[in-house]
Amino acid sequence: MPINMIVCCKQVPDPEAPPASFKVAGDKMTVPPDVKPVVSPYDENAVEAALRIKDTIGGKITVISLGNNLTRDVIKKPLSVGGDELILLEDAAFEEGDSWATANALAAAIKKVGEYDLILCGRQSADWNAGQVGLGIAEILGIPAVSVVRKVEVVDGKAKVERAVSDGYEVVEVELPALLTITSELGDLRYAALKGIMAAAKKQPIVWKPADIGLEPSQVGAAGRCVKLAKLFQPVRETKCEIIEADTPAEAGANLAAKLREAKIL
Amino acid sequence: MAENKGILVFGEIAEGEFPSITTELLGCGRKLADELKEDLSCLLASDAVGDLSKAAIAFGADKVYTVEDSTLKRYEADCYMQVADQVIGQVSPRVILLGNTPMGADLAPRLAFRLRVGLSTDCLELSIDPGTKQLMQTSSVYGGNAQAIFTAEALPQIATIRVKAMSPIERDESRKGEVIPAKVSLDMSKVKTKVVETIKEEVAGVKLEDAPAIVCGGRGCGGPEPYDSTLKELAAVLKGAVGASRPPCDNGWVPEAMHIGLTGKIVAPDIYFAIAISGASQHMSGCSGSKTIIAINKDPEANIFKQAHFGVVGKFEDVVPALTTKLKELLAG
Ligand SMILES: Cc1cc2nc3c(=O)[nH]c(=O)nc-3n(C[C@H](O)[C@H](O)[C@H](O)COP(=O)(O)OP(=O)(O)OC[C@H]3O[C@@H](n4cnc5c(N)ncnc54)[C@H](O)[C@@H]3O)c2cc1C
Ligand SMILES: Nc1ncnc2c1ncn2[C@@H]1O[C@H](COP(=O)(O)O)[C@@H](O)[C@H]1O
Image (tube, rainbow over all chains, first blue to last red; front, side, top):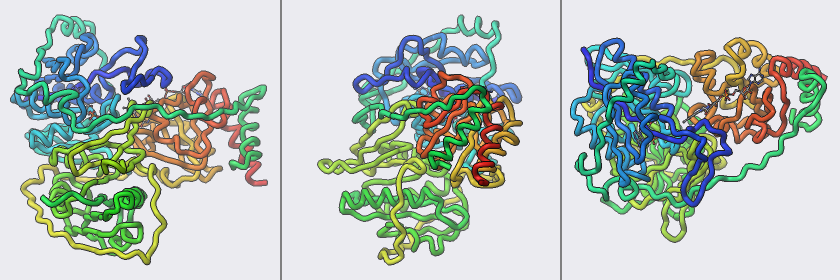
């Protein structure tokens, strides 16, 4: 039986940009213009999880993103690979929220969408790395949740998933509706076909403001935070790397061994 | 509700013992409790707690709340949430600390949202502001490219701490403390998830977390083969373990149990070989506590050379076998 799925996708500055491009200014993180925004990587894995379910049992995929001035080409990516609908919670008031404010707004939007069997989030966002919003949404909606999922199958109104733990994984069954947070081992998001990209370009996202999901501006974004950011900083790491040189790489390897012995490291 | 006072840590039990995170939580909790001049409590929930309640006292707890039930043999969110909820109600702590582990990272957000209070995850440092008594929570953000200090006003304040970021206190069997069996009623109709199977993927040999030396291979290894030959041979000489960055795990070259980094294992060996690894911040978050980092990479511009103590620029296929042979010779002699 086809199911209704919701995937929460966040737009973030490319987390794999060279570390030197991340610079704190005041209490904000800045990146140069050549660091492009992307869909947070684990959220792409979550989209892939939804697509695989759609491939096997059919269903509708609604993508929700919260932010402001979201880059259309970036945030429409899930549509280009097979997502059906895109809802943007987009307003200046949504900016600078913490996990609480974000999960609260996403849960309100999900309630407004109304019909859902499975909600998929990334295990953690690539900017704040909190790993809270998915489980928070489940708690607000009062539905079961499984975190750090690397495989999903939906059979007979239940999801059968693999949850990654330190020494292996657990096979967990959970009743629907449920929320899952997805990890990278699930697999990369598939490439978009040209047809998909063109179809996505034509599709208009639905845009909701705080009032559309029944929230006051004071309940969202910076105003709705539970946790205050007292300071953002970059600790200085000072290591000097001693490069072992030689005529050939093999010789350098042998010299490294000698060096480590000499320095009493081994 | 009673006034919020003291620190409550959620101890973890694995196969009848404390994994290191439990003693680290107790060490961190003890420090904060002393700063506040309040009590440190520890919750231990399991099918059998046994002598571990005494061990928790020896590692710094003033009070140990125990909950024993066969359904608590392994962590399952819907059971543990009921335990957590009820024990927090009885203890009414000011601060709650959990490990940033498969258990703590899963439980803490649920708890924070249930109690409608703030949470900082993966904290590297915690302290008490002497003026406001607020918990100052330093966590790593932007994949390790920055750190943030968070505070929250509502009580309790909740934080999860990174594995190996905090130090335990010396075990002292003469410490005095109180063991309190907590009354908890579990409603199984609220349990909507069921663990039907657990599969261990632990790699044979020295455990990654305990290894004094780690040979870690990255995407540049090109496939599963080097993990079983070149890297394994070097690790064997060092009596260490082989690990991997994320791409080799995602690609299925090696099991996830070998994954090191922000979202994998956190390790801090004496010596860490980063082989064909570019040195992304998310990877370095998992190994930057190593005493000596050695990079072998064919790209002289790779970021790893900014973080390593020693480096060789070259293809690992050429460098590593010669390194292994020479080390074997030197260590034998
Ligand atoms: C939220 C988030 C969490 C993440 N968590 C983690 C994590 O926990 N752990 C983790 O590792 N990553 C994590 N990542 C991914 C991380 O950003 C990097 O993508 C990853 O660490 C890169 O792995 P790598 O260095 O092996 O591969 P690459 O970056 O592709 O580097 C390969 C390196 O190998 C070198 N090389 C190639 N061939 C050879 C050769 N023959 N000999 C010598 N050198 C060679 C190349 O010069 C290059 O420097 C995370 C990312 C995000 C966004
Ligand atoms: N602004 C956002 N818009 C959409 N989804 C989000 C947003 N922030 C967080 N999420 C979802 O929640 C997950 C965890 O985020 P975090 O708690 O910030 O680590 C992400 O991987 C997303 O799936």
